[in-house]
Length: 279
Length: 285
Image 1 (spheres, rainbow over the protein chains, first blue to last red):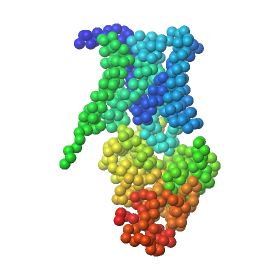
Image 2 (image 1 turned 90 degrees about the vertical axis):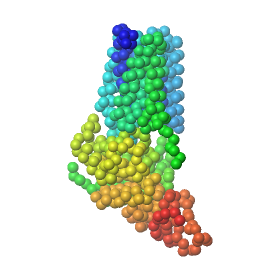
Image 3 (image 1 turned 30 degrees about the vertical axis):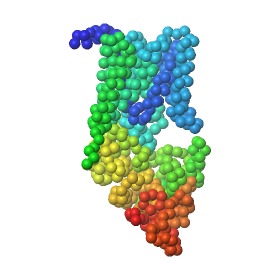
Image 4 (image 1 turned 30 degrees about the horizontal axis):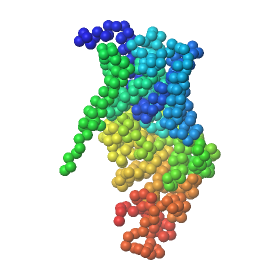
């Protein structure tokens, strides 16, 4: 037992846990919307697209999170604009835009001398988080949670039935932008914890677990949050004890939980779906 | 607020999509309170564009849509327009209960946080009871039969208090008994003064419940009382070669005075040779 608790006597481990849990809660709630809306690729695109934003923000001396947010949100808007004005479908537009932006970020990083560490952006640095980043991440996560708490019901309707949302007098275009903005903000916060490559797991897997285990939106959110928090705690712990990648450990823990949910899900589980007797 | 009776005026609208496709050209018709109107045409005839124009989802490049004498936006703010989507448009795996869906009809009446008050709950319960779904209120929507699924969304339209109800292909995948139950409900709603606009290509059932018909094919070909508009010549204009014409077995070759059976659906329409609509085939022969 002492061996399990020993890591948490380090201050940086406690900081990592606080940031990790805040990010996990926000990303888990948001992942329910992402999964139900079918925006998984959007999460992937936005997370990669923030790379040039981070580098350019460093060059002009702006806060890195602002640069990241602008680039991520810009990727989503640009993809939407390409879809609206050409015959290219949105998934293709997103693929072109985000990979192009990621490439720009890579080139900038290798050409420009900066203290932005590529590996930190790609894989996170939750165990070595700086004070400024700590508070920024908490502020972003708090803001995202507040928006979801205030507008969550409208966003559920937007995901379920945009036509009805429109007819009920809701501004569907604005709801879409709001959800995209919270998505971009969550990614910016999540990159701190697990990096741009793996942050998408936090934005999809908890919601997928929730959908497997729950038949109501509220319960789906609770399951997603519980799974994300459990994976965060377990991932940080295991990575400390085994000296393994923290981001990898968190995401791997989530994946294990997903497989478990896939197997035992009460209504939709693979193990429960026994073939019916032929007579 | 002064309760002005509901009305719908589609005034000479043209709608073109960004890709240049002209979906509707100079289309117009008018409906007054207390009517069931069938919006009839083949797939791609502009039925759904017409619905979208009435719902404010697309803005006509020319002409205008007036609901209760005012613009669509104002009608939406007053929750006058309610919509029952096609079954295929709904994600039935979405984790919501029947009651959750019906409650969504009340959003326009709630404050910004959408926290239901007692009045909202009462409206939802009343709507559920009216469509006979109160016992299944706590089911997840995917656990319902085809007819029950339709009734959930009808209940949502009722809970919303809509006076202009738009139903998109409500009888697809529904058995005849359920269809009759839905039609009975629609007639009761009409008698309370609502306008019910039903988009359908199920010709067989149109004469059994529509007071009026609007025939569309890229424009409004004809609009008015069913007996005047829903005639053979008009239908052939609206459907062109898209209809299957069945001949009756045992009567080949058809004598000159045989009935004509028109169908692009599972419930064919039966017409006399002069184009007068006789009714529909109740079962396969």
